[in-house]
Length: 151
Image 1 (tube, rainbow, N blue to C red):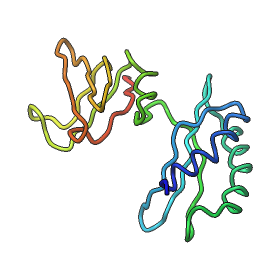
Image 2: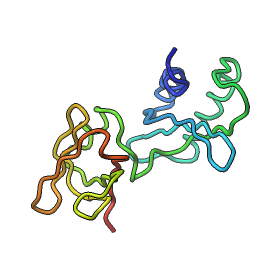
Image 3: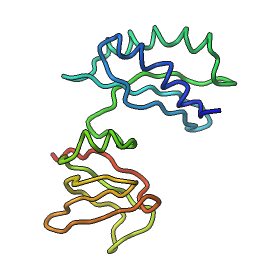
Image 4: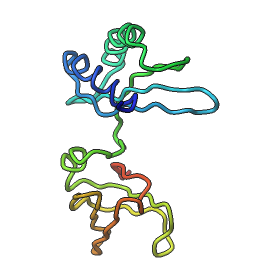
């Protein structure tokens, strides 16, 4: 049986697309003793509160009927955000050439975070250009890769 987030992703994707958005990610996490089911959406030109509300109103009864999660949880629909996490190969492909931040589990060269231009992604290997230095990070070495917005 697939993970609950995979089941919900499959259920939510057509609804999100019918509403003119794309489904970025689904997460089911425990924070401060409460479980949260979050559906992250994206849209050309940006996601508004009306988009989140429409999608939430459509998905909520579907989740109640399908009942994929035992127990109570807080359901939220929100924007993937400007500094969204990249997880799937298609995420990395979409943002090649963009500035990203790679956070590591263990320090490398005295640092646990690197910011650079995403050069490539294949088989879990992330390659960024950090200034003039190319850096390679293999799966298991990095905890997270996100888009980075410089101010």
